[in-house]
Image (cartoon, rainbow, N blue to C red; front, side):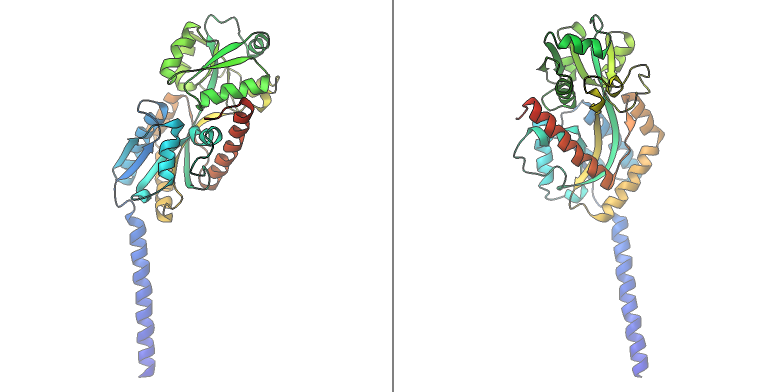
Length: 328
């Protein structure tokens, strides 16, 4: 009798364990159990917004879920990022489209109420877009060396799309490394800054590839260099700044990165589901075609490697901001 009871008790325990395992597995498979919100910390219409909406469509298809894009612009992305970091209701179904604004914002806005590395879960770097050093078609400068030598003698104006943008910070990094005399001229976005460059009202810009590629190909702008580590397949005849080498430019490598970020409390089962879904999305031809249209490259890092990249990027831009005297 005792043996029977012991056997029955063990069977009951195994049954409870099996049921718990079954419930846990079912729970993991249930995510997402609600609409997914994708927060874009910029206004509609820019590269971050366009990318977010394309990714939202593809993710929704892969996950069979509704992915809703929400634009929350302000203070170089720090307003939306701060609100996101605070968490709150629905945070386990909320994502942030991160960009260089996350790391640059940490460099130029002192006293932020969040840590750009520790307060988030880094899912996947989606794309990297090089900046292009461009001058007007009628500019007398046909190489980086010619431009730098001239900028040591007279002050040059460089346009950018807003304080703390990758365009702005690329110009400041160039100025710091080369010792060129350059004055930053801010505009409200690339749509406003491009006409000044095309007309020759400013001397140079370090624009994102999508904004200037068609103008380079039409001959309205001259590309002197790209800012990525390797030459862009979209501008194969244009050298990298690192290739130029002189004027400390062997140290100049930067791109405008974009990637999906979750809150630090994002559930593990949600992380696993998202990473599998993103892997599928990034292999789909629709995504690859979209990347090509932007003149971009697919992202290469995820998880811990993505986090390490973010940490290093924060340090790099803090140094540039300090040397350039930039603080908001």
